[in-house]
Amino acid sequence: MSFTVLTSTYSFMCLPVSSRLRSLCRLQRIQCHMMSSCVEPEVLLEKVGRVGVITMNRPKVLNALNLTMIRHIYPQLKKWEHDSETDIIIIKGAGEKAFCAGGDIRAVTEAGKVSGSLAQDFFREEYILNNAIGTCKKPYIALIDGITMGGGVGLSVHGRFRVATEKTLFAMPETAIGLFPDVGGGYFLPRLRGKLGLFLALTGFRLKGRDVQRAGVATHFVESKKIPDLEKELVDLKSPSADDVSRVLDSYQTQSSLDSEKPFVLDQHMSDIDRLFGSSSVEGIMQNLKADGSEFAKKHAEALSKMSPTSLKITYKQLQVGASLSLQDVLVMEYRLSQACMRGCDFYEGVRAVLVDRDQNPKWNPSTLEEVSDQSVDQCFSSLGDKDLAL
Image (cartoon, rainbow, N blue to C red; front, top):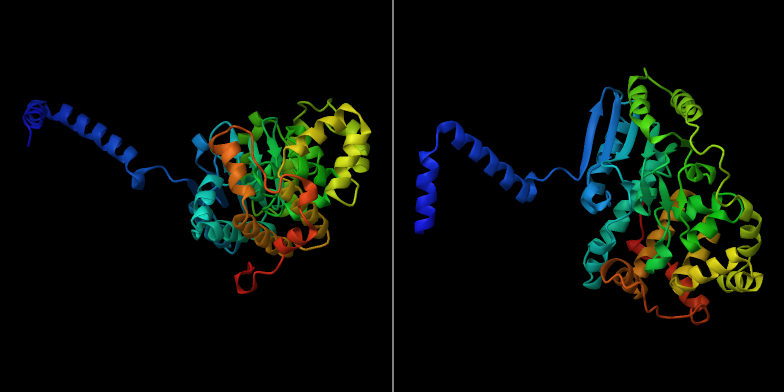
């Protein structure tokens, strides 16, 4: 033992008992903060009255969804679904900024590079959870009060009720990182009006606030300051049906007049979106945009030119096929696509350029739409045999 340690120990023992206790408590708090076993849970699962409440609890990383969280949420969701003393399920995000900004993609890419099992486990278990939400027999209410992208959309959009606020920021930005709008994007996006879903899927266009509901992604819009009261009223409901929940949400929406006078951000462009994105191929869409000449068309032609050509073509077919499939069949298809992306190179390059080095300059391979063959796209949709997702 060093002289410094001996001196420190002697000094500590000379302190009054009350001071020693305070010091020990501080030390325990510091040690608890440093030790992973003492760190606050990444997801909180609470029973409030007859309501099951799921809170994503990683506010410092915008409640990014990881495999540990999925493995906590799924069994609890199934338990509450079949529990006679649980009436409804609420899911929300901790902090002021995000519901859930997406999946923990960096960890997945690191695993994929070394053929780690996380590259399969994460997508498989995430999609199983998405399906459980979509088939949940109890009223499921997602309070998407903040950033809601990618994996966060999967935790909300398939549920019966999705409540947006003025703080909600929705996007499916996957084509910018060499992926595709997964978590059931192939199911809900083609079911939005006209070609809106395809437009959102290819461009990663962001919807904010009330526009998330106007687009059909959210079912309700409630001002953020009213969310705590809304949550309390939901908790106080006695043996509520889905209609009872709907009436409460409708009431709070009626009380929320913020931005109600503003038109939908894409209102004046909806006919253009249907026309320009109505082509039978991504190349055709690009030709339409370039030929149109409007500022709107130029802006989105430029946006698409920065996306992974492979991702754009996969996404186009994903939505085309998904339009006539069940959610379960879409998730099976998307698991195949996820593993194709793990085998390719654009996903790793996209994550490097956007999330790691942040140079925003990915080198896609192939680098043009014309170089991405129909055959290579079709292969991404091929069965994985006994490794297919089973729901």
